[in-house]
Length: 230
Image (cartoon, rainbow, N blue to C red):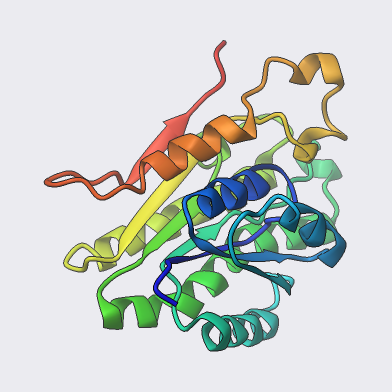
């Protein structure tokens, strides 16, 4: 139980799986969270340290509370929470149906809030821990076909910036990661292979995020912006 423990939502593919693999290589115990157990089991094959799988829909407050209750029972602590779960539906505003609107707000914004609430009190009591919110550059500027996605990510930006203020006198750290499109299954239904070939790799983004988690004397990194080359 002396090894540090990282909880990663949306761990079944893309950036979440890269983060899980790289943190496991550093010796972290890993909790893989996602909606599809089969995907998590596939990712777990590349985990080199101790891990557990938790099937959960982060948009459900009840499921999040139950899952994190189990996580604390199994591991005793959460040293790093990475809020990575996300969903995007990309259409002109008038064509986005209400189910897609609900899903993006519920998963991207409310899911981040629910998972953060599940660890925050214990982190504050111990005065240690790190929360990483994977936000996307859609949380920094409006984009065509991404109005509701941007709205959800702008919400996470506001939530994260408020956390930073709330925790400014605490040793609990918060990092917001804003990045452009990555070459992951997230974009499979949006771009073809040729359009995706110049996108960033999830492994590179994971390296940058993990590199910014390292404690450094007289220095803090509240946010990092990572963009594709134009």
